Image (cartoon, rainbow, N blue to C red; front, side, top):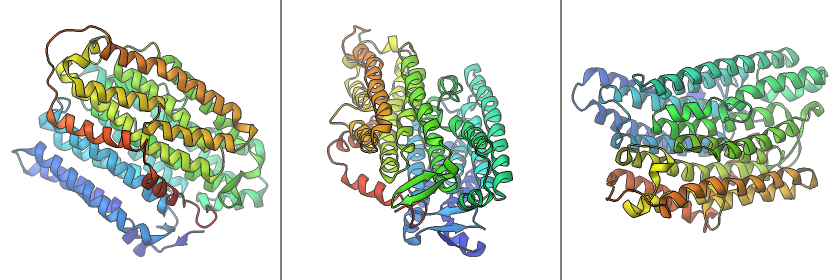
Length: 498
């Protein structure tokens, strides 16, 4: 068990959340007080807040594994991994936002404040060690996501996206909370680390426990956009401002995986040796999640084939990648978790890169439709080449980062034994399917004839595209530092996890 820290001492280990909360309030106050250059000031404060959050997060690594605030939150390398991930993802969105036309100048203060608020919610979710804390953090992420999705409220598509997002979210959260209430009734506790012992002592009825797990999985499945809880994603991704779409495809999705791993591995699994677990009370939830994984990647890839809008196509691509990542989750071993975390890192680079190209070209092209990308390579070569690299990396073609990520996932499945070979086969077949619709975009950019004339892409966008392109290529050749960082971050259940 991690060390239990009293409430006063816990404040010293919650500095990332305190810094984010402080800068969130500071941005709102500055937006009210200052009337000139409010957008630039808010952006600067947001970058400063994220930089300070990163620094205080790095300083927490010697903390080990601790439970904070009456065991409501956990601070460990696993949580710190995701906190750094969230700060990095949000920083990319903050940096690209000033050069876009998506955010009204009069409301930029609110926009940057919401970006810090969603980062705060995601950080809390990664550390949540109690059912109550999970619900509160998940709602903070969800409500802020609704506000960001509908930020362009004067546009019908953005307002529709926020409404659909909120409706789906309310249903998913209500279902999840009901499942958690069943878990509380079965175990008599809301703390994740106390549940396995409570289930073992109480001799819970397997059917009641399975129903509770299934209902809780609805809420987590909604957050990661897994089938059949994915139906909000295409409409929301298409209607939301594209910088928000890029963040939603990476940040809250990773937060969903963080809480999914901590919840199931802490509350519904028991250690079976170093780096291995067994399902608690013989509830075969890994098989249930494996079926969801296979269906998710298949549905996402098959529907993406017929999409003509780039944001909608990338939405279904994001759904498919949730299915790939879930492959590592079902293995109940350290190698599967390692593959998940490593893949999340490379997925962030290549997926944010693909969305960034869409954002950079939305102004010059005045379109996000695939047909308008025809002949793009002859009009602006660098974004077209970068887009091709990001898409081939998402497919898993060597020597790009996506190949290494998928290699770890498939290797973990194969080494787990014959029981999971079918899931590896489904994953490989889906990777082949994904190549078809990714190649459609590359074909349009490089082989189809389009309008003549040069396109001018903002220098800030080109710099950010290059910043994401370089690791997408380099991590396919040399990934040892990321591998060591990922391996160290797997300490989520104290000594038993190792």
